Amino acid sequence: MLENTAQTGRTRTNMRWLGRLIGRRRPAAASGAAVVALTALVAVLLSGGVSQAGSLVFTTKKTADGLGDNTVTGVAVSGTNIYAATNGGLAISTDGGATFSNKTTSDGLGSNLVQEVAVSGSTVYASTTGGLSISTDSGATFTNRTTANGLGANSVFGVALSNTHIFVATAGGVSTSSDGGTTFTNISANIGGAPVQDVFWDSATSTVYVGTPAGLSKSVNNGATFSTSGFGLGGLSSTVVKEIYVTGSTIYVATLGGLGISTNGGAAFTNTGTPAGLGSSTVNGLLVSGSNIYAATTGGLSFSSDGGSTFENNTTADGLGYNTVNDVFVSGSIVYAATSFGLSSTGFAAPTTTTSTTTTVVAPTTVAAPTTAAPTTVAATTAAAPKAKAKPKLPETGSGSSNAAVIAFAAVGLGLAAVAARRLRVRGTN
Image 1 (cartoon, rainbow, N blue to C red):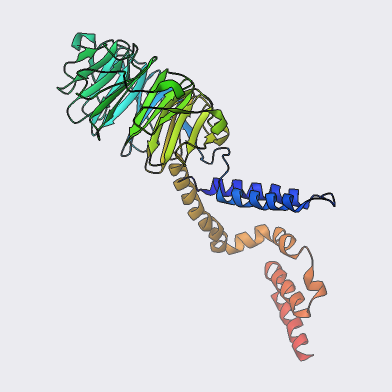
Image 2 (image 1 turned 120 degrees about the vertical axis):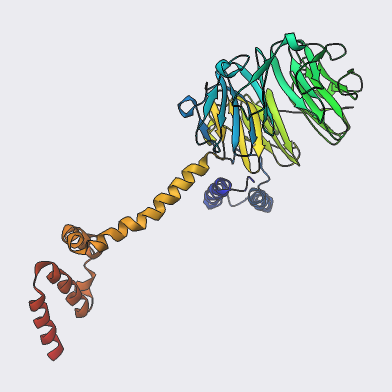
C-alpha cells in the first residue's frame, strides 16, 4: 500500500544524491571495499529496506470542514461513513470525508468532549467524559449511559464488542453489559488499578484484555473476573498501557515508553522505540493488519511493514494536521489519523483527484474553443503565435517552401492571398 508515487519520488531523490556522491572525486587510494559498500547501499535503497521518512501523503480536515473541534481524539470508519471523536462533539461524514456534520449534547451525547468512537453496523458508541453515548441510527441520535446505568464512572475511554457483550473502559474500572448496553456491571478487582485506559476483545480466544497504568489484565469468562498474572512486563519501558491489540498469540501494547510486542501470549515483551524509527516513544494508539503495524505517537504516525522491526514515520511534512497523533484507523488502503490539529487521511485526496480529472477533461475543450472561433483566435494571437513557434526563424535558413508557408499564413490574416498566389505561380514557373 505504501508503494506509491511518493515512495518512487523519494527513491529517485536518493538515487540523485547517490549519483552526486559517485561523481565526486575520490582519493586514488580508495579501496574496493568502499565500492562494494556503495553497491550494497544502492541495492538497499532500491529495495526500500531503509527506515525513512513517511511515504504516505495526507490531507487534513478541520473545523472549517465541519469538525466540532480541531483536536481529534479518535476515528472509526464504516463504509463511506467516517466518525471523528473531537473535543467539540462527534463529527460524522457520510460522503467519504468530503463534508462533515457535528453531533453534540443536543443530539444526546453525554458530553461534547468525545474521547473515542466505535462502530458496529448502524450502531455507534461514543466514549465521552459524560458517559457512553449509543446510537442505533448511524449517529443521527444518541442515548447516554452513565453510572446510573451501572458504569464504573462517567468518564469513558473506550469500548470493545463481542457477539454478546459490550466492554467499556472507564475511569472507575471495566464495565460489562450483556443486554446491548441497557445496564452494566462494573469490575474493579484484579485489573491492576484505575483508570482503565483501553479494553480489547479477542474473538479467537474469547479473552478480554484490559490496559491500565499498572499494565495488563485479562478475563476468559466474558469479564466476570480478571487476572493480572501470566504477563511478563519486564521488557517494557513503561507499564502505562494506553491501547492494546491482539492477533493470534501476539500481543501489542502502546505505552508511554514505546511499543511493546509479545509473541508468546504476553509471557514476555520486547520494547520498540525511536531507535527502530518510531516518531516518539509515547505511543497513544495502534492498529495491526497482518505484518503491517500503525503506531500513533506524539511525534507522528509510524508505520512498519515487517512486524515492528523497523518503522517509517509520517509527520506534518507529509500532510498530517499535527505530529501528535491520538488514534489511527485503516479502511482498505486508506489510512486515517486523529491528530491534535485535525483529522488527516490518505483518502481525502479522492475528491480532489476527481476534481482534477474533471479539470483535465475540460482543458481540451478550452483548447478546442479557439478552433471553433478560428477567425477571432487567429486575429488575437497572430502576433504571439509566430513568436512562440518562429522565434528561431528556421525558415530563413531552410528551404524556400518553408518561407512560402510562413508568408501564406501571414497573408491569410492580412488579406494578401492574391499576392501569395502570384508568388507561388512565379515559383512554380521557375
